[in-house]
Amino acid sequence: MKRINELTSIGFQIDQFNQSAYGKVAGYHYLLSYYKQNKRLVLSTSVSLTEEYHLALMNLPLTYIDQLTYQKPILQMVIQNINKVNPQQIEQMLQMVSTFLSHWQVKEICQYCQQEKNVHICHMQGNIALVCDDCLQQYQASVPSLPKVKFGRGLIGLILGAIVGMAAWVAFYQTGYITVLGGFLMSFLAIKGYEKFAGRLDLRGLILAIIVSVIMLAVAEMLCLDLEIIKALDVDFERALDLLPRFLEESEIQEAVAQDLAFGYIFMLIGSFSMYYQAYHQVKRQGVYEKKMD
Ligand SMILES: [Zn+2]
Image (cartoon, rainbow, N blue to C red; front, side, top):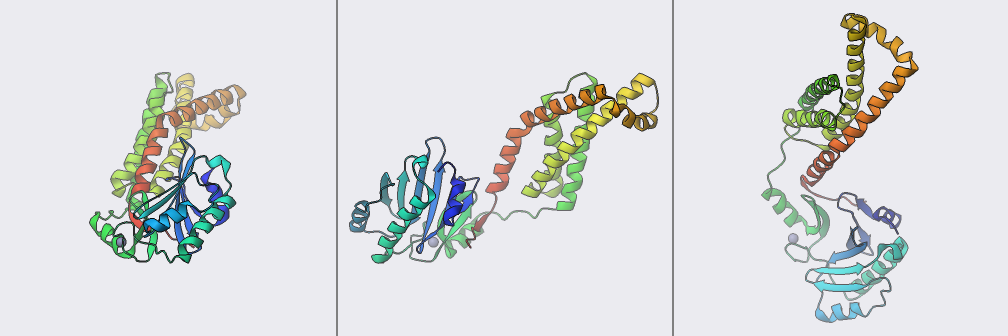
């Protein structure tokens, strides 16, 4: 197995951002966390186990499990190298553990209150945990609720931001440079515009800001070309706009435009990638909710 996504083949659901998978095997919930740096896969569940059962579990022939520990309430199993196992082997291991647990009537308990209750896989502001309804509600009440996103206003803010970004791009172009800063400004202003006007950033706003930035960069390039025509032929803006399609038929200009755009998009990516990543992180950590399992 190379990627955690492969666990969908045994009916697990994937939380891409946390590099985790979660699901149920023979009546018990399992959370699988993948640690990329050392290729480790950590399998865990939340149960009430006596010392005796813990020892008995360690004696099960769990071929692919390198390490098994229990510290109330977390039963944790480590697979040192994810490449050495396939999803079916993992399922087989979990099946064996579940069979053992249910045979000895070991109950799942809530990770927070450690009481014997029905537990659910929950998203707690970015972390995944096995929690009961009461603890989930309590936690939800303890964190300030998210302000509602005003999408329409956010869209206006986004477009305004992108227009200012476009102006900045055109200004930079006049100095003869296409810069990382220009690409960054375009996407930064689009995101900030949305955030300011909508009240907060959500995933929808982030994706739209990226799309609009990409489109606006091409529009900015056309504007720059238009300005070139004005300068070269000494015509007004509208006339230059009329002439633009004819200029674009020239292969030399096509090449120059393609090059500008290629650099523009590369610079935009360099300038904005970490911001996109952080914004995505921020959006994904918002909220507390149950992860639905079907
Ligand atoms: Zn609880």
